[in-house]
Image (cartoon, rainbow, N blue to C red; front, side):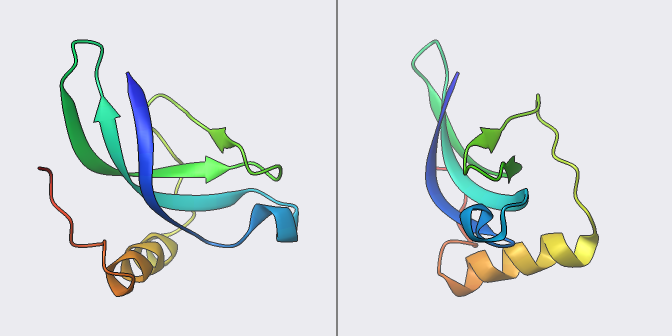
Length: 84
């Protein structure tokens, strides 16, 4: 499976803060059989900006942080997307 990031919001910029930042993303999931699905995910970015994938899990520090990221996505116009 491959994941293509379409949109992303983060708690901060890891290159500026030099720390891990939580990201909320709208993605296209492309499966080995050629099918694909859109969906959202939370994922951590390392201080160098690279992603830290973890088998479908991302630790959320709090519900308010998760809600703020989702609200940021909505205010940017992509937070109400649905699977196509």
